[in-house]
Length: 374
Image 1 (cartoon, one colour):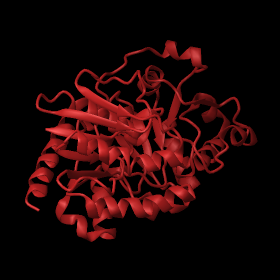
Image 2 (tube, rainbow, N blue to C red; image 1 turned 135 degrees about the horizontal axis):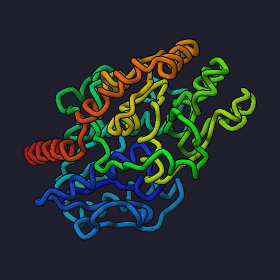
Image 3 (tube, rainbow, N blue to C red; image 1 turned 120 degrees about the horizontal axis):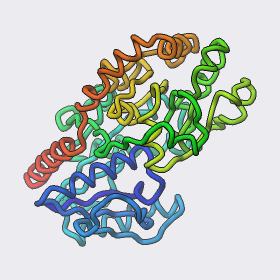
Image 4 (cartoon, rainbow, N blue to C red; image 1 turned 60 degrees about the horizontal axis):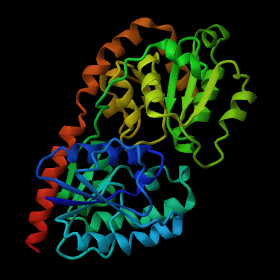
């Protein structure tokens, strides 16, 4: 089976949907009868853990935003036709309009942020999503959703997709870093900490989380550091200045974007992960933390209860007092923390990239059969 992949997100630092694309492609490339064709407007990051002997990559050096959009309607469908791929997969909500009619097409929809949390998106991104997602859903032979929550939302908002929709969850890290706490001293961590991982943008709800943390008693704040890992996003989320204004300079460490090895160490040694997002289609950091036995404090909305399972304590993301109560429980109640931690690895075992890739191949096969009957 020859699979064409929109791999544009592999040409930039890996986050979110880029992580999904990478891990799925890595697992797909292990399957003997699969040939992967990765299409990107700019060079794929050279240090990605892919076996490039089994993966064909095509790029054209179109780096900026407008050219990347033009690429998706020119080079992308042209390459797919030239390579005679059996199926084209859009792992990030998009399908090109001009795909050859004999190519089956599958799209993954991760979330409906543009409907359910529109105010947390860049205006241009919101407009593009409002066109691209319905087009992808209507054009695809088969649709994949990350979670049942996203699938239910798709059926509610775009009901015609229900007969071609499959839920395939994301996976957990394939290698586990067993680094010690001592190794984190080089980045400034010198006492127990809880962790946030994600892009600094409005949907991640970092400002409310910081306010909630600032309202803890001095003795609780002195017990534990708050470590923030993740690159800057958009929307004027000024983390460093907020930390200073709240008097948290000695309690909060802002690391920014971190490399894979450091991220693994952060997950492995954290007391717990916080993810109080206003909306998530899946919430991959939840699984990435739980695979290390690290419990999670997360929101009671969208997909997060589904993913956190019995390894998570749920809070109301829009209620600062609820977030504060959750932090107090996780920091000061060792019985709760231990119970959640004991459940974490078992819960994370529900998510496996290789299993997800096999399910995705079944969806590709179904799409190819369906396209052939048109």
